[in-house]
Image (tube, rainbow, N blue to C red; front, side):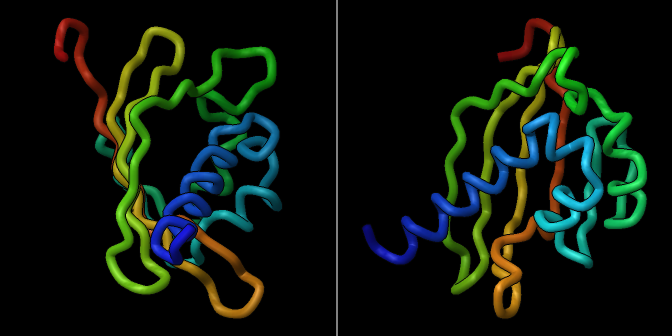
Amino acid sequence: MDGATDDVNQAIACELQLMDPQVRASRELAGQLLDPEFVEVGGSGRRWTYETMLAELPDHPGSSQDAPRYEPSSISGVLLAPGLVHLTFQAVLGERRSRHSSIWRRGEGDAGWRMYYHQATRVPPGVE
């Protein structure tokens, strides 16, 4: 496996971890996967930062073991530069379908891969 493929696969693995209800419910676990400079533009149009996301993520959909979970599909990625990966995918959460784009960057030292930016767009019913 070449370095680019390995980096993309590591970023995908981290993205999937962030969809795990156990990770989403834990400020500590989620904080290890979000970059301190993290920003998200959610499907609602709301802008999230590292602190606001960590504070509210446990109450977001997909964060409970007993509720619907994110079901990702068509996940793919590209290495933009050393230590920088762009991922795109679709996800279903209950009846809601969405498209996602995220940028992951490798942290310093042992920090590993962390989500730097995320964009989610809801897909209306009937749209392919």
